[in-house]
Image 1 (tube, rainbow, N blue to C red):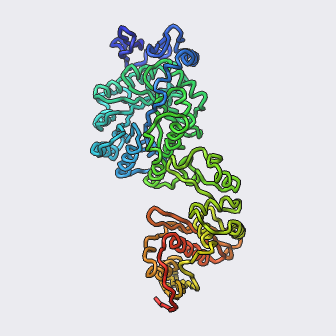
Image 2 (spheres, helix red, strand yellow):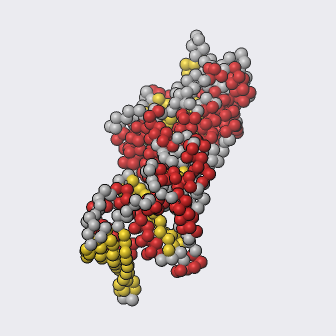
Length: 607
């Protein structure tokens, strides 16, 4: 047996000749028959190219002689998103059918070229997904169904997985096949020639059905290190069978960028179809390896939103897209889509039921947060001094954190975000912050408390209300000597202008009762306060060795429509700490939004 290519009169590849039919049994070692120079007539000088047996040497010559040809359309890259298939393999992630359709819409709006929707041959949900997605009317993306090559010893036409793949009725399919001789023998338990036949016949079947074929060469880099002849022969066979894309997979995430680039060059020395890269993150190098592949000429970047995926994840498209487009000058998505990056990342996190990573590059809430006084002072004068891009380019924003490490510049920048004409004493506020942090307060996670502190320091500030007195009573009703239902009651005395209001409310716990009592007093005067809801309540014991006398820090997060803010309280009494945080949360909202000025009148109201 000999693997050959047919060429036309001008030397262009037309496919595998009929005489090259690949038998099911392994007659000769593939590396023994791959002993002739297989040239790429559209890119290579056949008089200079070495044998496949020296691929790195061949790649070096190719790089030297044909860099200009290699860089054709160098500014254009294709994004291939596999969040719905590879990303869904992350531990703890399970997308519903509706989740998958929502994410598909988001990716299409963002401008992704290919969306790999799932494996229709593996489960009913994915098969139904491909039926539903046909009615969505996508504007930018091409849908891709994923599947493996035929099984050993079965014809492509009789392979159930391939049949379901064709029935998914997508314009493109991704076929994964082994590129590692070790995997062929130890995992597939078949011959090397049979594996090539499985790849060739599966691709030919897809082409007969009119599909664009993306061939994923699984374990390609590991396979190259084991047996470069065989790994390269897989690419040659897939290309000759009609694959439109050849994707090199670092399936176990073992590669280093410099070595990966050499191997991508070696692959380009024997094939002419465009290459893609599919990198896993087991060594924390998936993004770096993807960038190296691009530098070596790869045109398709496969990855997932937020890097979700099997084990440690896949290449993170949220990091790759802005790096490639904003820093390296490649075109990946429409330029006006870049500002959607942060929203895309966070929305997919919500759909995956995972908390957004605050420290994620580009899109994390801390990605452009400045805490040190030195940094804040520099950013105030020159933003690029401590920021690699403008946060607004990716839909993010700058955050100036306040802590005991801050300087007056931090306070000044926070104040400028409230109002350009704040009249307050920077040093007084800074001293108060440092004093409170020494007592256990922490303001970098409670910027709302800092904002309120600045507002209160303004001589013209009038508080919308004042809590004069509060009391909380908790009553545990015993049932048969065991704790039963818990009833909490809160009593609040409050002054609004010259009106004193007494309220009493019950709740499911002391904090809930207190919140209800405060709102009961405030809502008749400030009805828009009903838009505010508490979305998080965090308790931190600062000195657990003190047992029940320990100091407790409480952070409350509140929201109203798209607005969110956090406030903090600290005390050796958890009710007192909670009350501080709740009161500041409500006061801050009213300070921001209330235009109502209660008439000055002295009376007392009981509710």
